[in-house]
Image 1 (cartoon, one colour):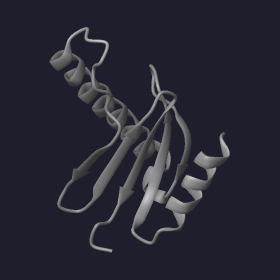
Image 2 (cartoon, one colour):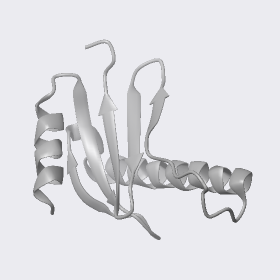
Image 3 (tube, one colour):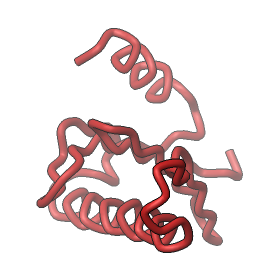
Amino acid sequence: MPADLEHTLTTLSAHRSVLGYLLLSRGHPVSIIRHSGVVFEGEQGRKYASVVGKIAESVQGGMEEIYGNDSEADEVRFMRIRTRRHEIIISPDERYVLAVLHDPAS
């Protein structure tokens, strides 16, 4: 794992409002490379991983629909989804998808 990614994950874990993170592989099926936080343990973590993968894929697919086969098509870099209880931040790149669950009230 690249040192800058390792540093980012360490920094995220130390933040008091962060409930956990998922580092996922790109592709099918999505797999959990690394996680932090009780919320992402076991079956719950696998559910989050699946849903986050679908969200990232769906949004990127929507962007491709808008731009068609244009070589200058936009690429999704960052998504923020807020619910009543939490906020999930999703950042896809070429190799990984990083999802961070955080408590905005903290």
